[in-house]
Image (tube, rainbow over all chains, first blue to last red):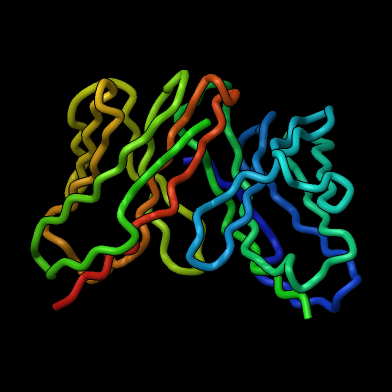
Length: 116
Length: 111
């Protein structure tokens, strides 16, 4: 199956700093990637839909100026958490869809962010 | 909006069979997915149903009834490694084919 690489796997940062998370599709082109956030014992919550070459679509309640998404190529999407605060500590996961309507999402391995 | 319900926790014995239920309410239903997620890891795809009926894949089977807004995941011959959270997710055309996830069912397999 398709492979999605996400890194870093974990990151610890100081409050106020910015953190960039990368999500790459290794053996396919992903026109659409999704970014999720998962708090402990909670489900995956969709943050935004990232479309190659256009602006991301953010879910209600997600600050687009805080969570910057860039999808500059068909194989790479990045999520930058700007001015991170302890409440941003969470597990962030990206996923990619190969084609429109494809029934499978391919997930990255996730990034555990801890903000001190 | 969408609403997905599944039990929070379940416990079952090694070698047994367990059924995890999922009920949903959505408009523009376009498929139901089951994912397995071990703690601290990303979800892995288990099954996909878009038509009514049972889909069998090895020890795992998934059932869908669209009229009832109901699905279940059946795990047979449980193994200790099956201890994980199982996420029910619904895809909807009204949400641009995005998946909405349930809160997950944490399954504990005991000896």
